[in-house]
Image (tube, rainbow, N blue to C red):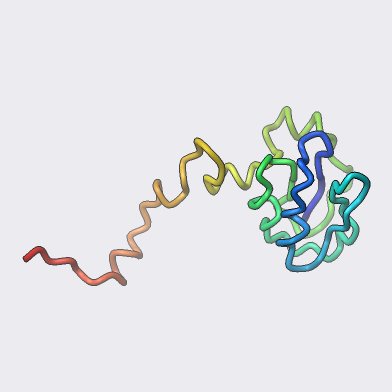
Amino acid sequence: MIEFVSSDRCVQCTMCVKVCPTNVFDLGANKIPIIARQEDCQTCFICEAYCPVDALYVAPYADPLEVAPTEEHLVDNHLLGSWRETIGWGKGRIKLAAIDTTPFIDRILPVRRLE
Protein backbone atom coordinates (compact mmCIF):
# COMPACT_ATOMS: atom_id res chain seq x y z
CA MET A 1 0.00 0.00 0.00
CA ILE A 2 1.26 3.50 -0.76
CA GLU A 3 2.80 4.84 2.43
CA PHE A 4 4.97 7.83 1.63
CA VAL A 5 5.64 10.65 -0.81
CA SER A 6 8.89 12.54 -0.29
CA SER A 7 8.33 16.25 -0.72
CA ASP A 8 12.13 16.71 -0.70
CA ARG A 9 12.70 14.40 -3.67
CA CYS A 10 9.51 15.10 -5.62
CA VAL A 11 10.01 17.10 -8.83
CA GLN A 12 6.28 17.80 -9.35
CA CYS A 13 6.07 15.75 -12.54
CA THR A 14 2.68 14.36 -11.40
CA MET A 15 3.48 11.01 -13.04
CA CYS A 16 2.24 9.09 -9.98
CA VAL A 17 -1.08 10.91 -10.18
CA LYS A 18 -1.41 10.12 -13.88
CA VAL A 19 -0.57 6.42 -13.69
CA CYS A 20 -2.45 5.43 -10.52
CA PRO A 21 -5.31 3.16 -11.63
CA THR A 22 -7.35 3.82 -8.49
CA ASN A 23 -6.92 7.61 -8.19
CA VAL A 24 -5.17 7.48 -4.81
CA PHE A 25 -3.41 10.86 -5.13
CA ASP A 26 -4.50 14.47 -5.12
CA LEU A 27 -2.22 17.39 -5.91
CA GLY A 28 -1.21 19.32 -2.87
CA ALA A 29 0.72 22.54 -2.45
CA ASN A 30 3.28 23.20 -5.18
CA LYS A 31 1.96 20.24 -7.22
CA ILE A 32 3.40 17.74 -4.74
CA PRO A 33 1.10 14.70 -4.66
CA ILE A 34 -0.58 13.77 -1.41
CA ILE A 35 -2.01 10.38 -0.52
CA ALA A 36 -5.70 11.25 -0.44
CA ARG A 37 -7.35 7.83 -0.67
CA GLN A 38 -4.88 5.33 0.75
CA GLU A 39 -7.61 2.75 1.29
CA ASP A 40 -8.09 2.63 -2.51
CA CYS A 41 -4.47 1.63 -3.13
CA GLN A 42 -4.19 -1.81 -4.72
CA THR A 43 -0.45 -2.15 -4.00
CA CYS A 44 0.29 -2.42 -7.72
CA PHE A 45 3.57 -0.43 -7.43
CA ILE A 46 2.87 1.44 -10.68
CA CYS A 47 3.29 4.85 -9.04
CA GLU A 48 6.61 3.87 -7.48
CA ALA A 49 7.85 2.33 -10.74
CA TYR A 50 7.06 5.48 -12.75
CA CYS A 51 8.46 8.00 -10.25
CA PRO A 52 11.63 9.28 -11.96
CA VAL A 53 13.29 10.38 -8.70
CA ASP A 54 12.46 7.54 -6.28
CA ALA A 55 10.23 9.77 -4.16
CA LEU A 56 7.60 7.13 -3.34
CA TYR A 57 7.40 4.13 -1.07
CA VAL A 58 4.79 1.44 -1.55
CA ALA A 59 4.81 -1.14 1.25
CA PRO A 60 4.35 -4.68 -0.06
CA TYR A 61 1.30 -5.20 2.16
CA ALA A 62 -2.36 -4.60 1.44
CA ASP A 63 -2.97 -2.96 4.83
CA PRO A 64 -1.57 0.39 5.91
CA LEU A 65 1.41 0.29 8.26
CA GLU A 66 0.55 0.83 11.91
CA VAL A 67 3.21 3.51 12.24
CA ALA A 68 3.78 5.88 9.33
CA PRO A 69 7.37 5.62 8.08
CA THR A 70 9.63 8.63 8.27
CA GLU A 71 11.72 9.78 5.35
CA GLU A 72 14.85 9.23 7.42
CA HIS A 73 13.91 5.60 8.06
CA LEU A 74 13.07 5.00 4.39
CA VAL A 75 16.33 6.56 3.19
CA ASP A 76 18.47 4.75 5.79
CA ASN A 77 16.93 1.42 4.78
CA HIS A 78 17.06 2.10 1.01
CA LEU A 79 13.29 1.78 0.69
CA LEU A 80 12.39 4.92 -1.26
CA GLY A 81 12.03 3.74 -4.83
CA SER A 82 13.08 0.19 -3.88
CA TRP A 83 10.59 -1.44 -6.26
CA ARG A 84 11.85 0.71 -9.13
CA GLU A 85 15.39 -0.38 -8.32
CA THR A 86 14.36 -4.04 -8.07
CA ILE A 87 12.83 -4.04 -11.54
CA GLY A 88 15.78 -2.12 -12.98
CA TRP A 89 14.01 1.10 -13.95
CA GLY A 90 16.26 4.13 -13.94
CA LYS A 91 19.66 5.09 -15.29
CA GLY A 92 22.48 2.75 -14.46
CA ARG A 93 20.30 -0.01 -13.07
CA ILE A 94 20.39 -3.60 -14.25
CA LYS A 95 17.15 -4.46 -15.98
CA LEU A 96 15.31 -7.40 -14.47
CA ALA A 97 14.98 -8.99 -17.90
CA ALA A 98 18.77 -8.99 -18.28
CA ILE A 99 19.18 -11.32 -15.32
CA ASP A 100 16.08 -13.46 -15.85
CA THR A 101 17.01 -17.11 -16.25
CA THR A 102 13.48 -18.47 -16.37
CA PRO A 103 13.41 -21.36 -18.86
CA PHE A 104 9.77 -20.68 -19.74
CA ILE A 105 10.59 -18.49 -22.74
CA ASP A 106 12.47 -21.37 -24.35
CA ARG A 107 9.29 -23.45 -24.24
CA ILE A 108 7.15 -20.94 -26.12
CA LEU A 109 9.55 -19.53 -28.70
CA PRO A 110 10.15 -21.50 -31.88
CA VAL A 111 13.61 -22.91 -32.36
CA ARG A 112 15.66 -20.56 -34.50
CA ARG A 113 17.51 -22.28 -37.29
CA LEU A 114 20.43 -20.82 -39.13
CA GLU A 115 20.33 -21.41 -42.86
